[in-house]
Each structure stands twice: as structure tokens, then as C-alpha cells.
Image: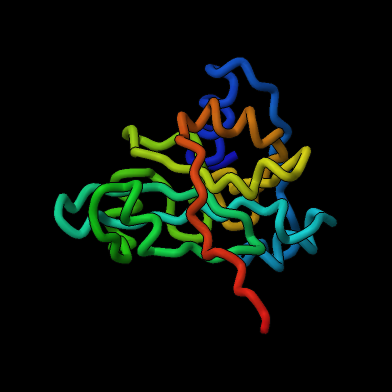
Length: 162
């Protein structure tokens, strides 16, 4: 087990959770690939998206359903500053995870975290476990608690068809 995956396992155990980390033989880098590997709906995949605060430079973690995209303008409203792509080297240094395997838990340092409320529509969601092919299943309410995430609506509002 890699150090990154072991850190995720340890974080879950410290939180009193028993998770079963699955190492997939298929790629799970994209939400669609992860859903196929887990045999679940793409909406059950948790995308751990790391952004950098446009004014503070601090990393921000947004947990979003694989079926949705972040509305950056809406997200900036609850984060309190504009968001921009985070430098992958800084993400690795601060979280201990490489892009593609960023877990919602087990970071090297605390990161302010928000979770999109659409994840609560599922009884179980799948999140990255510290490696590009490692995932774990968890109830979204447990994920919100263990990740210390504020639950918000951060995805774009559905478009009305006329």
C-alpha cells in the first residue's frame, strides 16, 4: 500500500470509519472511468477539485458529483474570493496527493472544504483514496463529516428550456 493510500486509510480510522479501499485494474482518473470501474452512476463519483484562492493563494477543496460541473462564480461567493486552477506541484506539496488521486481526506495539512449538495442524493458515493486507481465507498453524510465540509450548492443551476 502506498503512503498516500495508507494516509487515507489512517484518516478514516481516526474518524471511526471502516472503509474498504479498492484498487481497480482499470483507470479511474475521470469520473466516467471511475463510475465504470465501480459499476455505479457517474453522479456517485466524488470529484475532489483543488483550486487556489485568487487573492489569498490558499488551496480550497471542492467535492463535486462526477455528473456536475462547478459554477466558479457561485463557488467564489461562498469561498469568499475568486478561484483559479491550483498548481499541481503545490497541490502535491500541501495535500500529499498528485492530481488524479486527490482524496477528500488524509491531507498533509488542513484545507478548507466544501461539498456540493447534489452528492447527498445518493446513499453511497465513491471517492479517490490517494492513488489514480484507488477508491472507497462512503455515505455522503459521513463524507461531509469526516472531510469537515460545508454543504453548499456549487453546481450550475439547470437551464430552463423554452
